Image (cartoon, rainbow, N blue to C red):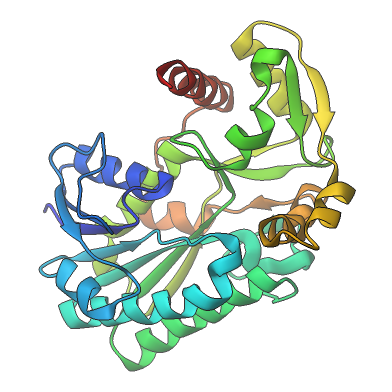
Length: 315
């Protein structure tokens, strides 16, 4: 049966990808944005306007929906101030409309202690500022599920790539491919968790479709693509048809800049993820949804690079 799914943050790369996947699956999509305009590429969706920091607006914008997909993601320096308010407002909207809440999680919850394989039952540790904020948000959702009847499911995934701008892949890793350079932010010989956006978007839609089987508070992890820097470079070289010179990030300079630039400070805090081997276990997710379509790693990297080239050409 088709669902009505509200996408909070429909203009962002994840929200946009999930909206497209939901439309392709035959669901009705309500794209919620601050200006109330329908984002490009979402023909067939309904546009609604709301400032997510205003609870009354968010409640009104999610009237009549079955699922609220929460892809709201402020800029890093604003997390401490905005994330608790956004969490409260999304809970209020889902509660007022009797909707299921689907939250986009990440690996920050595991802290610097992230193990080589992390899953839904892996302990969370607030050993970074952003990790502590995410843990507090999920505890708010867990309390709302227990005390306010707002069922919430979190799907944690690795670093996104493909499906839009604003991630490590397009801003750093693939930013200079046309100049023959491949930039890797950390150790190239250890596994790192990635999520190809079209694939993880379909996983979120699959969870939405099974929301009646998910009472209370639940956590899943998305296996996605686990790659070393060496592996991704080989796929990138195949995609561009040339050998690429490998470069790295000047983390010392970034940390120094962080003393005066808040964004650089927040980016520097997450450097550990590029030096700690980690992957995500998708067993629990697959047990619920069954096997989901997975794009091969070489194809996903090639498609992500082609998409960036098209965007540059259009610009």
